[in-house]
Image (cartoon, rainbow, N blue to C red; front, side, top):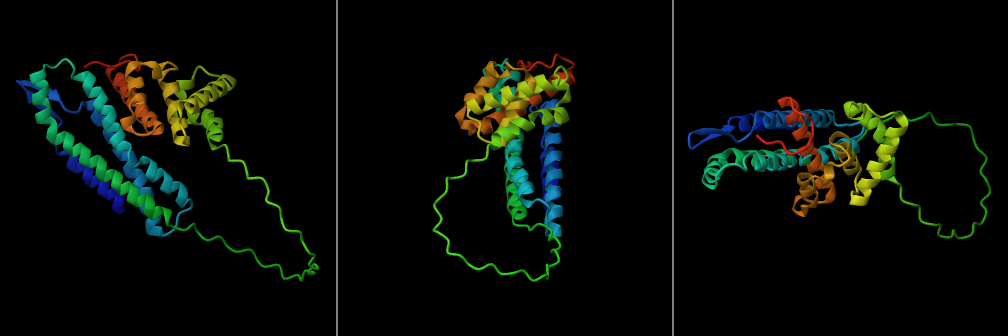
Length: 288
């Protein structure tokens, strides 16, 4: 289990860095307990995914090498996305600090934040390498059917006219297929968010969320799923809120699909924090 063990080692190394600093006599969290819980859960998920890849590599075969390789590649930047979401939370959490206190905090927290950045980069590199290794595996060989030994009459060859170029095949509407699968996905992964929907209204809402994602510019199946998750768990108007809109408009964060993924991570972190604090699970900014 080389890749999974390496991620576990990196996580243990990161845990040795202090998660709080003392600024002018006051203890200030570099990472809140809720953020640490979210980071730990995400790391455990990636470690389990890496273990799945390790097993396939050890066996030399994989039932779906392309699918597993794609999942490893997609999840490679997840820690970096989570840290970006944490940064947005921290800006809100620490905005009441004086300029001098904030400067001291930044200086004291530098080691922990730098370690987190290195952790995210190394995890991303490991999952990318494992994705490439898994992608080269072969599927298990299926038994060949017994040959039909009955002699078949050979048809006489007939001259055939040169084939005319046919029309180009229409592209597969993969995004539409993803949208069609959203009701089932939401029922399995976010049942509490759709408890007020019946089957018909859920399909209409999923179709609307999917079309909104496409209008926004989303181009990947994962982007469709992330956008729909944001809509159902955060509410239809969540993307119009200032903090969410800022993430979607920040082109420095990557493609629109990357930004939607970051927004989804940030929203889930906010909802988790609100749940732990016993507050209303509204995606409105949460102040410490």
